Length: 206
Image (cartoon, rainbow, N blue to C red; front, side, top):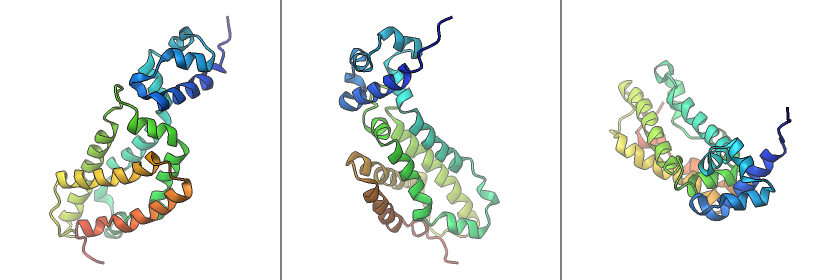
């Protein structure tokens, strides 16, 4: 029984990442990817169903990281939070935010593919879907805070969607503009000063 050539996989993914980055998914050519990787199209189809499946494999790490972050927020039992934990959760801090930026910077090319080159794939609406899910999570948390009498503002789910769309754009833009890690870290500090979620919901002061 022949032993699969494992050296193909990293070459294929690297070649695919380069082609998708230059051309976007729709204009990318599988033959160009194969030529760069030095493999046949048959080797690709042994591993992936087609070009879209290959694109999804390239961005898989960053998708898992972002969906894991979202799941943690969405599945949190906010009713179990103490008032002190609620206050802390609505204040965005550098220490809490910078790991997200560091994760995205580690996979910055794949993140750029996901948010700007994915038209024609199952991820073409990733940003909208991510913002929508985040909006629902924030709304759920907000309702718990409001029901405890800790928030005075009346914030709708649509308003949360608008605010979080702006927030998501602030996360994406540093990578679109190829900022360095040091620039992104400073950007993170500015974001933490700018996005005062506790003020947005008029969280009562402790």
